[in-house]
Length: 187
Image (cartoon, rainbow, N blue to C red; front, side, top):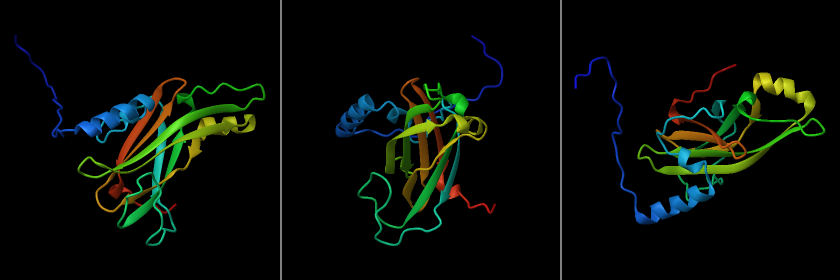
């Protein structure tokens, strides 16, 4: 068979062996949390729930010995705390009004900080509850629906993977950035 044309081939450059304990823990977590399989470092971004993301170091960084934000209790060393501002696109969510006109939705949000070795350094997974009053709806449709979780990350080349999951539609949105590329822009 003769094939002609311009093609680009993509492939994984690294493979990591997972230990049995890790596989069992991941299997249990995936069964109870459908967002987790989408949160792996280096996976393609998903646009099922579109959003804009602004990540900035918080202005007043906590001093040494402060408790880091995130679920990794063993996180130590020089840390930077980031404000992660999501602006969800209202068009990506089904938000019908209740009898009083308020639009409500529960979403799962995940933040995972990865090192260059593909290992998670810190994470924050939480449920958020949107409640948008009728008088706010027009503005939210044009500028987005904001919320601001925070996460602590170690210094160096680390990656932040973000994700949003809507259980009522099974839609997922994910985005990953290199945190060392984050710069503060004067407005």
